[in-house]
Length: 397
Image (tube, rainbow, N blue to C red; front, side):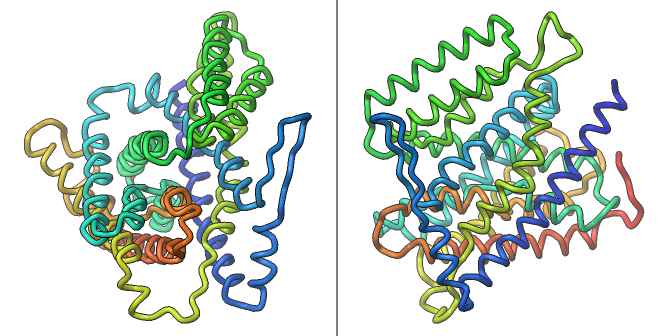
């Protein structure tokens, strides 16, 4: 069993690292499309209208929003599955392993938001993007770590992954509370009715994946129409997927779904999302764009705010003896790992699309520029620090 768990963890990190590398290529491809004669085709693809109509139910959105609202709901479903597994029987089931990444995640969300707010507090429209630099992209960060090979101790990967899970919880709460449109009571009631149905299925130890998914789709459509962001349906659904079945101790519906979705999310959904959202036009970029409050606030929030917040609060927690420095990590490698947390690509782009959606003021350009610059600087500095200070020989302790 122990060997099986080790193989699962090794496979997980290998998969996420590969996904991060593919994400880089997808983002680069989007920028190439947006800055060449292919730009017309890029816009045409993303603006393609896609409609679904069943009786009086009508959903009509451009392809870009189907990606952001639909495919990303599957991503959030996977995040929810991973979160539940980690809390019940993974690294986060041990309270001693929760404190340091949890405290680091709080600092990594609070300080970047304060950095952003310092540059934009006078502009109420720009302030809608305060949560953009509060996110960490685990796929990208692990992709950068993979470039260092076997020199990276497993404890660093576990710390970074655990911190990113707490970061995802924070992002989910932020989206639920701050990024909702006008609420439709009827649709919200329909979504709410799905929850006791899922609870009943869970308590009856029903293992049929199709039943859970069907109710999840109904809940997604209801949330889509309610004004609460539809991707939250994925997280809610994941919380009710059984991790164990009394009558089948050798089978876990949750782990089965998690295993099935990893490849789809890592190698299709996230690269598609990156390609659809990273295409910024660089022509005409000058000092005004680079120093715009939105762009500068995100860049410095990710690059400076993240490392200060994560490392600073982890340092405080260790000095106050709330937690211990993980085995295999030094203060320098902890700082390098904290710097990698400034790679906020996927979730930052997602929150940015919510923050400035329909604002009509063109801030979406500044948002993307800041995310790419902040993530690039964080990734480069984090890699340089870890490359210099990690042991030259591999260690998996």
